[in-house]
Image 1 (cartoon, rainbow, N blue to C red):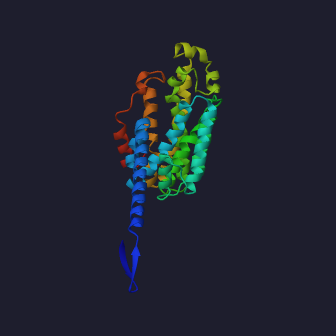
Image 2: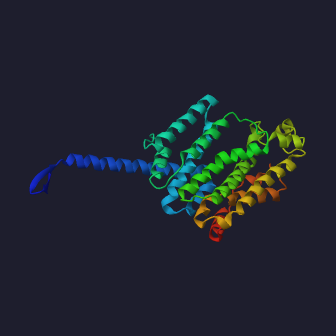
Image 3: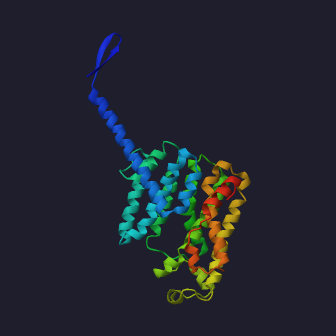
Length: 311
């Protein structure tokens, strides 16, 4: 038993209380460290580009960036890990509830939620953007076809752009110019994700190009399933890739009015630009195997753009 003196009187302090408080704090620290490792490992395994980009964030915000990215990866994986869409919707609802509870200070015992809760102690984030991502991921569970290029842009806005808005918030950036740049970069990211995943989708007997594009170039889905490259496909890919490139060009017009500290949130435009250049090199043959090879120059290109203050 320990003693302290207050106003000339002895007061006994129960040492068991101090031990319990210390043990509880140690347990919380251990859980947070485990959550940090979980998020970092998840991003490192499934999103190499953003894992590299994380080093350009201020050190005290690095874990915030990884938590947001891990959240998106976790949602994206639901589509491929459930046996039917009903189970997928249940898991999406779990995340809606998790976001609500996390922002109310009651995160579930889940590492990403724990990290997001910890992030709220460092910066202000909007639950609205998390929920927009959940809604879009849920809408994609049944692989609905894209009808127009506007549908592609909407997908990018509700996923990639919302992630960039969250990153801007974490960096303390508020302003229409930065938001406009993030919107266009996000739309480009969304479109390029569709292009990157085209071969995989074909293997699953899905065509991810908008039907207005396939109709414009008289492309038969069955021919693609049977033969791969078909007449008109390169022209279709060129048109969709041009749309993504136009969004990157538009985003760069906002650079003069964006503070330098916003740059890390927009660096994902760099690997997008690299992919488009390689796609052009192979004459927009989306089935070119070399397009799936990781860009070994990416770390240098990111560093170069970061130092120049560009994307």
